[in-house]
Image 1: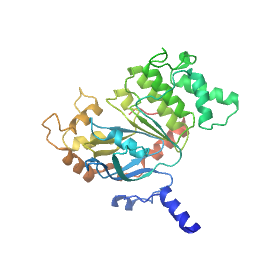
Image 2: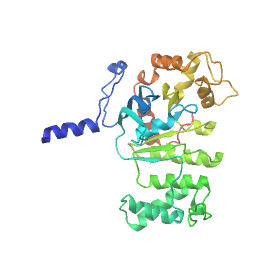
Image 3: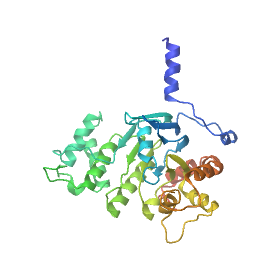
Image 4: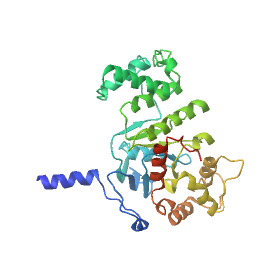
Amino acid sequence: MNDQNHNESSQKRLLPSFYLRSSFANHEEINRANRGFATVDSVTTSKGKTILHGMDLWFPEGCITAILGPSGAGKSTLLQLLTDSLPINAKGVADVNLPGVTTFVPQDDMLHGFFTVQSYMRHYASLVGLKLPRKELDAKIDKLIKALGLWGQRSTIVGDVFLKGLSGGQKRRLSICLEALSDPNNFILDEPTSGLDAESALQVMEFLKNYVLEAPGRRIILTIHQPNGFIWNLIDNCVLLSKGQLVYGGPRTNMEEFFELQEQPTPKEWNPSDWYVTMVNDEFRNHALSVDEWAKLYREWDPMFEISDPWATTISHWRRSNLPVPLN
């Protein structure tokens, strides 16, 4: 292969073409090198069952994108697709563009039990090639440990089935600390708040919110189950799946408008996220709309492409003014 062909091939891998909807024609051209996108054709099992159907997704920088949906909706499969970690019995056809370094925190912790929290952080820093003066590295480690509420356990061993050490929730927070060391651009997490008490879950989400706003070019992508109201208000962007189909994708603040238009507004006694997930789950209730109908209604409405990058102005304003992140 000559140099010209090699360069063209590399460019195609780095900057894949996306099947963007025609409504983008009214906006300025998307800078694909800097935007987070995924265009999914399909994900199927070896037996031909479709796990994820075709969808176009947008992961704006400076935002937390939450992937929601009932059990079996395809949330974990989507994360596996984004991190190129689909199981061998699944085949995915997709273009994924997440600029910069990507790290993934799985739901099940895979930690060595004999390290203490601080020694694990130092060891992991050397594994990922983090080259900082010792004093600067220690300061960074201490900052992360404090931010995720592990300062009191900094000298505690991780532990395992034979050694008493950190609790399950503390191990989850340590896993996040470890991956945050390398300052990834794309921080992808599978159920980071699962199994945590309400205060710890909020602390994790506040850490992620601060992280994504701390420097340009960062994005958080996570799956989450039944977030409470405080956590829900920290989320910027939502991907709602059901039976492998995209039934909503766009700003969290626009979701209520979408459901109101379908005459399904959130009742006062319901948490909005619980309501949305319940409405698109047609397995246990006689809903007025099927999943196929929800997906069709979303494609017709599609608020994400009717607005011109609302996050860019908002995030820029937060950074310039040093104001706290708005919670509504």
